[in-house]
Amino acid sequence: MTNNISISCQIGTTNSSAALGLEIWVDDQKFFDTDHVQTTEKITIELAEDEADHELRFVMKNKTGSHTQINESGDIVADAMLTISDLSFDEIPLGHMLVQQAVYTHDFNGTGQLIQDEFYGEMGCNGTVSLKFSSPIYLWLLEHM
View 1 (cartoon, one colour):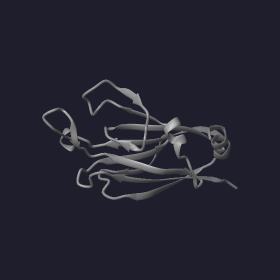
View 2: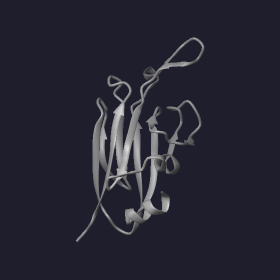
View 3: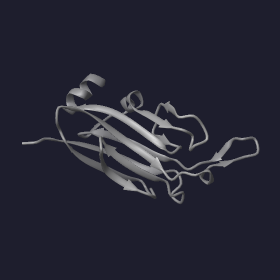
């Protein structure tokens, strides 16, 4: 009998007309792909549990300069972002552990150098949020909580 890992989260956007896209991957398998996140929705992925290392990736795409409004002083006054919240494994919320473990890699939509940043639940630039984990998931959770 094979056990599964249930990975779930809420995805959303700060601007439903912005046509921001999102892909969700685990390792080399794409589980979710949309070119336009319009509303907040719950996404659930079922993954066969094994004794291996894995990588969960959220990939934001389609953001352009027109999605960000900047005033004369150079301050951002409006922006379109994707939100990822309530990430849980087997209904156990990761909470602050997501901030500690996830890495957000982006290049400011082609205007800067590639950086690795912390992830606080919002993706404002095309790029990838990566969370490495291992299974059995309960052992990984115990080691990182």
